[in-house]
Amino acid sequence: RARAKTIRPLMGSSPCVCGCERLSNHTVAEAAVPTVPRRQCGINSSDSFISKTKGKAVSVRSSLLAALIALGLLATSCSASNSSARAANDLCSTAGLAKLVPQLRDANGKFTIPNPNKNLAQFVAAQRALSNVIEVALTQAESAVDIENVANKIKQPATFPVAWRSAEVGIGTDGNKIVYPEASNDDKSLTSFGGTSFINGVAPVAGSDSNFYQVNRGDGTIPALVSPVPTLLPCVNRLILAQDSSAGTWMPPSFVLSNAEGQAYLIVDLCVDLAQPQSVSGTEVLTPSAEIFIAMQWADTEKLAYLRTDDIAHGHHAG
Image (cartoon, rainbow, N blue to C red; front, side, top):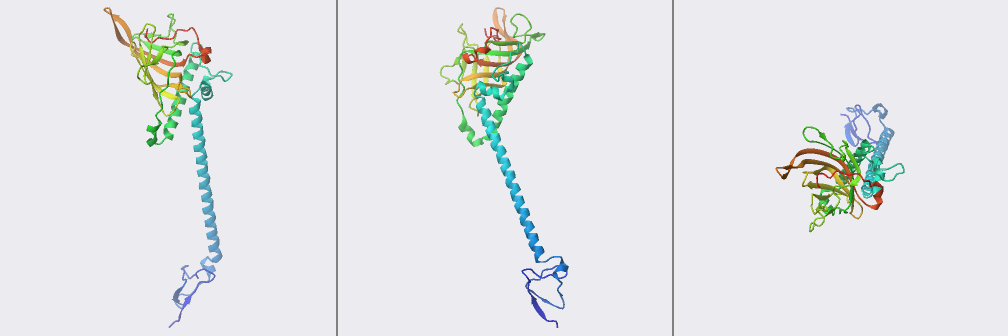
């Protein structure tokens, strides 16, 4: 009968047998399971050490790579956040708009509104560029806030000064032919610039806490109502318009921008008029019509006096 003995590990590693089975601290029959030199198994203690060292090196490299990726994502996030904050602040002033929207600055970098009488395409491009900038800024602000905090971020509505000027491009149809609502001398003009806006005379409705405004005329009539709707951006309000004599309204995207004190200074809007007043048997009634306007309107302040003209802006049939 063959003697059995315990095969103990040498140099901290289990001995190897054919098939590379580890027999550390196991009792086996020497005759039945002959030992095999470690080199024949293809491993030894130094191989094991190298393998472990390589594994640790790979693990360290992976950790470093993950850390670098995380830092990169954090830096990108911080950069995007800072950019969004700057854009939100730039919407609060004409100087900021001149930085944000190239179409709204002149050759000297000063804020301006392109004159559609001189370059219709340039004005339309500026109007659309500003609308897109505002929409993207709003999207970023909405994406950055937790839904649980939205209700705590309600802002006060913008307040409107009384005097306003406008620039518009408009076209219409009476069902049979194209009409030109901006034309003042039957000249088939599509545009006006710098004249008195149809919302000139706007004032808060008494008791509405500046949530509703009425457009007052010198003859005592009130042809239109305006309501600013605050957003998550402190200087941006959406707009609602209702007109009594043209079934006119502002379509989205239509916004009013205000300064840091909340006073409105610029409106960028799309407007439709869906009716015209006509006299039928001595009674004025609204008849179907269709007019579309691309417009910008600004508070008529001394700071923007250089945009004033004697042009006649469309009154939207408001008298």
